Amino acid sequence: MTEWSPQACKKIAVVQGDITREQVDAIVNAANRSLLGGGGVDGAIHRAAGPELLEECRRLGGCPTGQAKITRGYRLPAKWVIHTVGPVWRGGAHGEDQLLASCYRSSLDLAVEKGVRRIAFPAISTGAYRFPLERATRIAVREVLRFLSEHPGIEEVRFVCFDSGTYTVYRKVVEELCGER
Ligand code: AR6
Image (cartoon, rainbow, N blue to C red; front, side, top):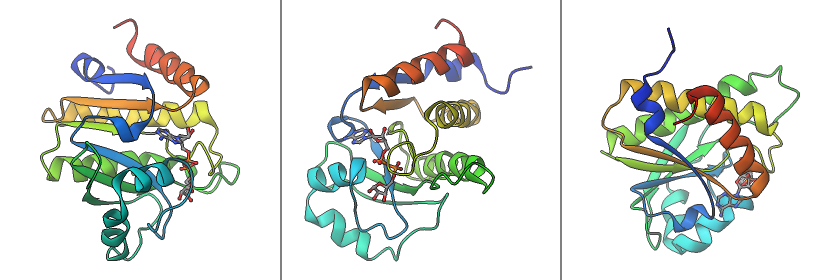
């Protein structure tokens, strides 16, 4: 018995691009515990959303690793930004896998609460936080497939890969877990 339904596989998409351009209900930000901005995808999201995003983030009081908080999207095409804090890779024996899985689940829980139907994720923790890409990708895709199997209200989950190396790994992992779709 697989852990997810074939329908779940039909709801995921892998694309290469800039997540700030995604026309979905919610985009996920790979933030840090302060939620006050940073580099990478976090910097890009704050630049594209405008200063109102930082203002709202200041009122959230940070976020623990593995959890998520939600704000409006302001000048982004997406209505919501879900800020999650991935683990910093410290060799793999410090709960990194579980914390990363929890980022995906917590983000999707918030999405369901807000009635989000289409959501886009970046490759959380695989940049500045140095989580090994293929290991992170397997966790990301598996958690999303499991969640989709239990929450039919989510219609589409898009994995937005910034660079071609990330895109290639996501395509490979989705094919391994879902087969030819
Ligand atoms: N759209 C989609 N993906 C992007 C974009 C974009 N516009 N820009 C970068 N990426 P990172 P982390 C990819 O470092 O590892 C920040 O400073 C990037 O190529 O953004 O979770 C935070 O404030 C990589 O594949 O996030 C934290 O301090 C992926 O997004 C820290 O970095 C994640 O890379 C979080 O580190």
